[in-house]
Amino acid sequence: MDLMNHQLINSIERVKCGLQRILDSVQENSLTLFDKGFYFLDLLYQWQTSSTQSHWLIPLRKGVKCDVLRELGLEKTEKGKHFQYITSLLNNTTYPANEVVSVYRHRQEIELGYREVKQYLLDKLMH
Image (cartoon, rainbow, N blue to C red; front, side):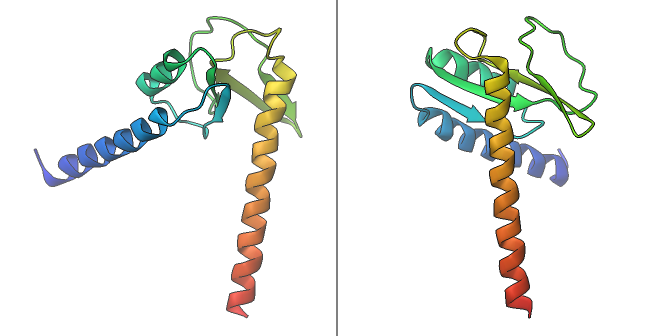
């Protein structure tokens, strides 16, 4: 095995160990919002089966091909952009799709706020 492959395997193992620690600390009645493209399927399966009320939500990357097992209406078009999500929240009565999607949108707004604050602070340090 060459050095690059060895480093990549070590990096993946460190990520999986970190994710396992997160999984061990998941609380009941929680929803974890993952970044787009977070497809550690074995971890997501463990997340879903470790508790009946610990859920996850991930926006799909554009162009991802997957089999739809159940259509929940987790899509949104905003400013001409189309968003789709995958989730472990399968009860559309308990977890209405529009509310689930709005939770992720709220997360995005928080991230934008953090980015603006960091840019403002960096500008202040540079000038």
